[in-house]
Image 1 (cartoon, rainbow, N blue to C red):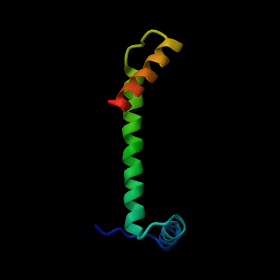
Image 2 (cartoon, rainbow, N blue to C red):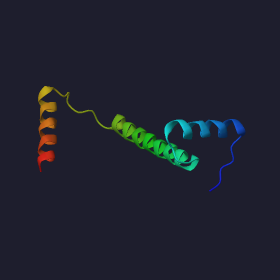
Image 3 (cartoon, one colour):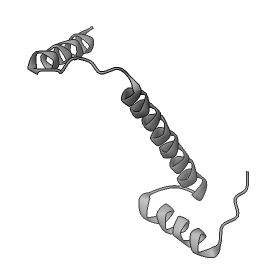
Length: 76
């Protein structure tokens, strides 16, 4: 895949590559694509959650239970 950029955008990409430790402009573009995929996945999850039926309010015991489950997974 080849991408044509106007000189101003090419300069911006070159600056990002140089200042953020990317090896190539392709690596920078791949990272941007991955971040966009993550953003879209997060948006889909948020929309799914917003469309779901409400649950009962959570309290301190709920979060204590979550912490306990995480601790058990770490030791398993």
